[in-house]
Amino acid sequence: MQFNRWTIVATMAVLLAAVFAITWGTQGIAENNTRFLIRFTARSSCLAFLFAFIAAPLQRRWSSPVSQWLSQNRRFLGLSMAVSHTYHAIAFSTLQIAIQHQPLHGDPLSILGYVFLIGMTITSFPTTAKAIGRKAWRVLHTAGMYYFWLAFALEFGMRTMREWGYLVLTLLVTIALIMRILDRRKLTPVAST
Image (cartoon, rainbow, N blue to C red; front, side):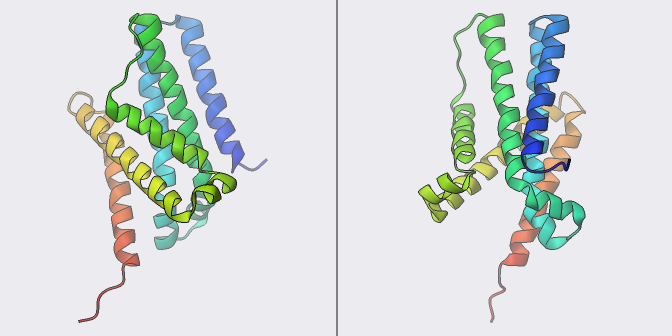
């Protein structure tokens, strides 16, 4: 069996389900292990996002079997990020409702992130993408993509001050943006003087 397309999405869903089952099943639903799940799913979401984010520029600049695989599976990597971030929402909601006994609430920026996530997920299929039109699809996915880049960069960047483990993720997020900027410069025609 080849590891591509829906296999990627299914693997993300099953692996995260296993992590949740093992964590909560062996240690109970408590604050420390739920916070671990929140951090774990933030990282898995970021990695899936980064693979989708760099797929096109990597393929255009340094074509290889790896970049070709990323490019061919970019949509499914994005859907895997959506699966991971859904688990992230489950862990966060569990922390607020079941452990801290608070009503579910989120800051406006997090809510906007999930609005982007739902919109991008729904329009990741040919029928729905065609229904909203190419221009609207491009605006939604470009805005959403850079919104998530900024969210990961800020979140991990701020945590780097407290935990050095986030430095690697912050560097990866930064390198991914540099790759996209260099790719845009390559695609932009130079104006003749």
